[in-house]
Amino acid sequence: EAGVTQFPSHSVIEKGQTVTLRCDPISGHDNLYWYRRVMGKEIKFLLHFVKESKQDESGMPNNRFLAERTGGTYSTLKVQPAELEDSGVYFCASSQVDGGGADTQYFGPGTRLTVL
Amino acid sequence: AQKVTQAQTEISVVEKEDVTLDCVYETRDTTYYLFWYKQPPSGELVFLIRRNSFDEQNEISGRYSWNFQKSTSSFNFTITASQVVDSAVYFCALNSYNTDKLIFGTGTRLQVFP
Image 1: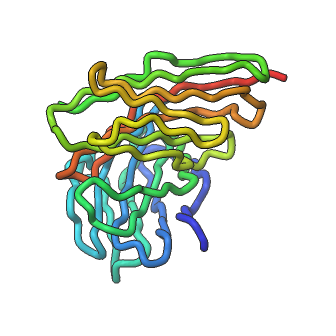
Image 2: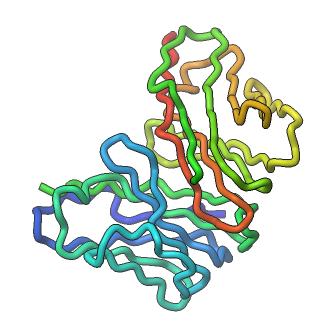
Image 3: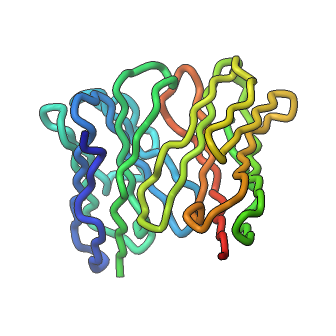
């Protein structure tokens, strides 16, 4: 069974440009999460989808970030316009059951975003 | 507020040494879950273990073992007879029964030298 996949693996853009990250969760997983690790700090939660609905977006830093999950399958995270502080590794995770914290989240390899 | 502290930023050992990675957590919830993930050089986060707050039994999986102590709010991870392939960044994480949001520590980089 395929794991969580993310594309691209690495993206280098200039400040002010737009970047779209994609995540394909494990097949059958209704829950999809985005996290970010900036400059060697802790990995921080961004948002959580249950199917196509945003369950929790409390970690989204500002309105330059837009996440979508049309049809409840893959998700995209768009940053527009990108700023220098957006550089970091963006992780996607998925889980099978919305078990109120009990379910294990399986992570993808991450997308390393560099904003110059 | 919930918090996870991994005080060890980096640990270096020689192959076959035992090594313990510390994890201390803070939460006011009585029902919560603790996790360990491994991030090898390839970058992906690999799930290692999940424990719930009502199960304080230590767990052993091959060379890996975990010591969960609610009295000290710690969930430490020991690798016995370390190998070069154990070199990675290890993250401890926490979430509660009423949220799926994982709270991570800053990670501990383990380097195992031959």
